[in-house]
Figure 1 (cartoon, one colour):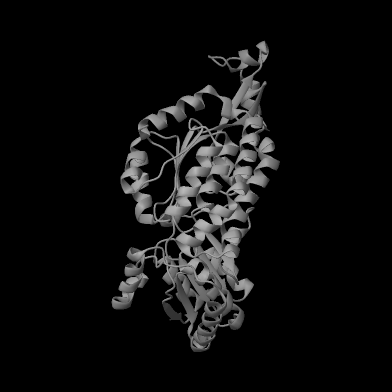
Figure 2 (tube, rainbow, N blue to C red; figure 1 turned 60 degrees about the vertical axis):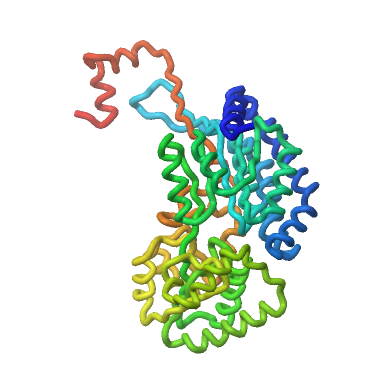
Length: 425
């Protein structure tokens, strides 16, 4: 079956209307949970083979997050999907108004290789909860994970409801030639521009979860030992191959030498006592090695690996100026006094901020996750994901009231009361 035929199959099934039923959505979420539990061991093995990801790291950064999203959606999807009544106004009396959340339709979800389970299945949870049909595209750079996910999805769901296709760039290109009602893409800003350009042909909305250079600011008043350990952990998680990994350091001049010594110790300790995820392939390894020959490139491109360029700054304003003179990052990390942190939050723009730690904001599913500007658009996790895959349709139901209707009719001779009530003269 061609990708065009797959797309048509999904679209035709969505038009049947079955996916809009909330009980149907909950049943499919339970099916997904059962599938994840059935294939959990195979997923651990595949993550170990493709990325050398330990079972513990795979659980905390992949499987547990997916399960939590499913459980939460099962508890709350009925409330999310319920019509929300809103107040009317004098201009539309007598009537009632409400917002009806309808699924957008057919969604294309393209996942990356760095968290290949989490970043494919969490958007799928949102798609199912919202009532959409979905086409899934896992990354070819984690082939064993991709194979297991494909087997799992094909066994669990009929292809007219949720389908999955493997392949390289040519498959992505063919997928992007089709008309979708939503495209959810996780990857680099450069590829995000390609996706958005393709979506523009059909005015298709996009959720782009990108990346960029996330700064890590260390103030002279920070607890340097704590900062060093938490920054080292955030950088080495998945061996730096995380879209919200600290990308570069800005350290206040007075504490730079002491902090770098503590950071070296923290990195050495973590490296000795933890299983390090491998760099995904030779191409990625060659790119990282090129930074050693041309160090200044580290300040222009997202590193996506275990390298950590540093600059010092004099005043906090200097650090803010450096951040603001570059593309908006997906995350910003600040170590120091909480009052100063408020200033940094106010004077910089980023998808998210963590004060006195790194990465962990993604572990709070009640915080909508996403970027801004070059680091992406749209939000997901829990209700934010449901909303991203839904259209909040505005509905007004007018009542038949002859006197009131005559007041609003042309030539408005009987509308003095209405005009006065609306603040006119």
